[in-house]
Amino acid sequence: MSHLFFGYFAVMIVATSILVVALKNPVYSALSLLVMFFHVAGLFVTLHAEFLAAVQIIVYAGAILVLYLFVVMILNVKQDDRYHSQWRIAGFVCVPLLIEAMVLLSGGAGSRATGTRAAHAPSAEAIAPDNTLAIGQTLFSTYLFPFEVASLVLLVAMIGAIVLAKREIGEPDSASPMVHPKGAE
Amino acid sequence: MTIPISYYLILSGVVFLTGIVGVLIRRNIIAILLSVELMLNATNINFVAFSDYFRDLGGQVFVFFALTVAAAEVAVGLAIIIALHRSRSSINIEEFNLLKW
Image (tube, rainbow over all chains, first blue to last red; front, top):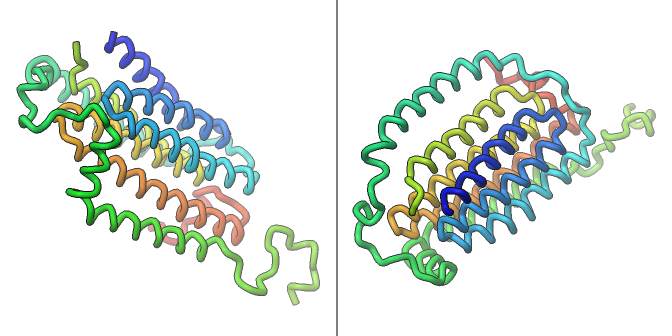
């Protein structure tokens, strides 16, 4: 049964991620990325990470993707019909990597990696039934300093985004430069 | 009946490679940022799979931090895209070659 769920989620994740890259229209790419986020959240639920599944949907699908769609709608980009001329380099890099990954994983999948999980587990305490409580306790005890650093990263990113995206005072509206032709003098 | 960890590794490897291909071949900057999101999600799948495998919550906490970095990256990246679109009125990656060799 768990294999069935994993198969469904894996197939959907791979298919939608390929669609993200292959679709020409950025809006469709963003929407298929939305479907992928939901399936990744489902995969997290099967991996006993319920809190992260909720956060994945709220933050990724709710905030980040809406931001993407917002910018796509603002910029009103024409869809580009061609891929980058770099696609040969992309194939040259990625096909050997893919083959290498397949060889490595097919060699290791049969013998070592399929061993029982309990044998590899370093006898730590089992993941608590209340996933959110356990994550909170870990986050605010062991990982307190990285947590503060993460808040600093968010603050810097917020200030940087505001500074980058704001218009200079007195700068003419470049989105409609022909409205005020006298302003260029 | 548990799923072997190598399945998760293959899945996240395939998603990560898809992201790399997207970064290399797309010409729209927004699509490139979406591909970067794909790569971040591939690492998140890896983190959570190993967190379940080793019964250690550190992996899930790191997914939390990766989420933070992804949010910061999106905010700054989209601000840069808006600034670029304002100055050049284009977001085609091939028109921005000032720092290319």
